[in-house]
Image (cartoon, rainbow, N blue to C red; front, side, top):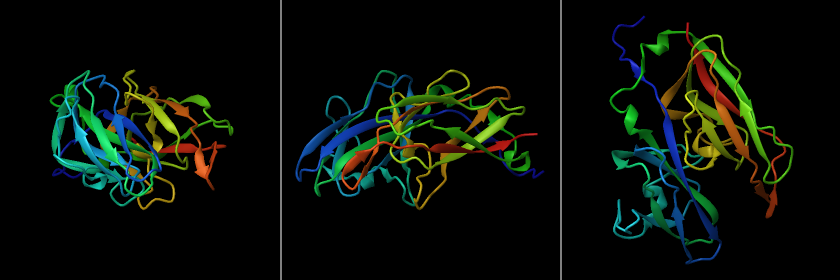
Length: 259
């Protein structure tokens, strides 16, 4: 075992989605607002699924946080499925419990729909984060499948729990062959990882994407005999202009079983 490696912090990554609802009209402006944060978090980065739209992120007093004017969303958010799906901020944005974020999004090229997802770490874990001692030298790679149980029904809601494992597990990231499903994850401690159903691409690498496996900002330590709960919502995918429900799909957790 190497003596030079530092312990690896673990913990809960917290997601705050903000649906935009662009309608394909050039020049339209839509407001994308998150739900209230359940806990105090430090926002460390952001993701989106739009290519050309501009935006201005504000607090609820409409005070600009990162710019005074509309700027390209991709200066503030990573692009899902790209080589940089999560854009890390040079300095975290503290957000207190009960607060929310608001964005004014300007549609320049007729884009439709869209989500912004703010990614944070819990302030309660900032100074007391469990750490793994040299996990690179401990255990073996392990893939955990999570079945969405979709059956081709639009707006179908399903729930899946992982199987209890006989050893402690560290989850580093995830891959999915789902398209645009929304998910909500509850950790082994009963804490929800997001304050609203969140696009699956914010948590998992996107199928056919440049980065098929999305590694999380902080790995999650799953104790033996404990589980993760996944709630899925089948919102469908646009296929040839028709909203079509997904007939199946899985999430694959990229993990490591510890000795």
